[in-house]
Amino acid sequence: MDSFKELCRQRRSHRKFSPEPVSDEQLKTILSGALMCPTSKGLRKWRFIVTRDPERISGLGGIRPNGSAFISGAAAVVAVLGEPAAQEMWIEDGAIAAVTMQYMAEDIGLGSCWCQVRGRESCDEGVTAEEKVKLILGIKDEYSVLCLVGIGHPINERKPQDESALKWEQVEWK
Ligand SMILES: Cc1cc2nc3c(=O)[nH]c(=O)nc-3n(C[C@H](O)[C@H](O)[C@H](O)COP(=O)(O)O)c2cc1C
Image (tube, rainbow, N blue to C red; front, side, top):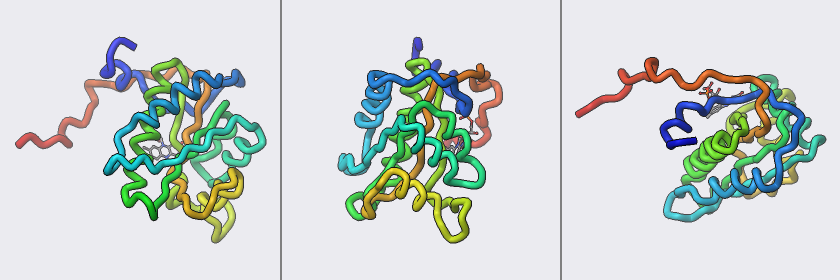
């Protein structure tokens, strides 16, 4: 990509992927983007769980009644966690890292999409999506799960962002 602006224009969410695997090198590049992100007070208290295990990925696709199914078709999934007792701003830190991974994935020719976990219910009454993720990935109690980022080789072309439709009316100049 020629410039960061062009990367921002090209990045779209991808929810359909080919079965082609994502390599160690590609995942390391994506994770390096997350690990270089700014964090509140520079604490870097996030935690990332990376899986390419088909059984786990299939389970993660079923954590919510809607909005998570695309995860089942991803070649790799990164769960973005925070440690609320150690970092009050864990949600902000996690969101910055998750989106940076999405831009990094786009930059190396892969597609990705965010799947919300925090605050969502699962298909089973009284069970949260987070509880499901914790079970599937064996996550300790002290961590909270913000989201999953599904990654893979996209099979659909998506139109870039339409610069003529940007919501400039939501920007106030003072
Ligand atoms: C906080 C957040 C939560 C999201 N949750 C989901 C989700 O659970 N499932 C999903 O398919 N997409 C999810 N998305 C992706 C958005 O639907 C997507 O970014 C939006 O439709 C704009 O499309 P674009 O990314 O192609 O510009 C989420 C995105 C964000 C930032």
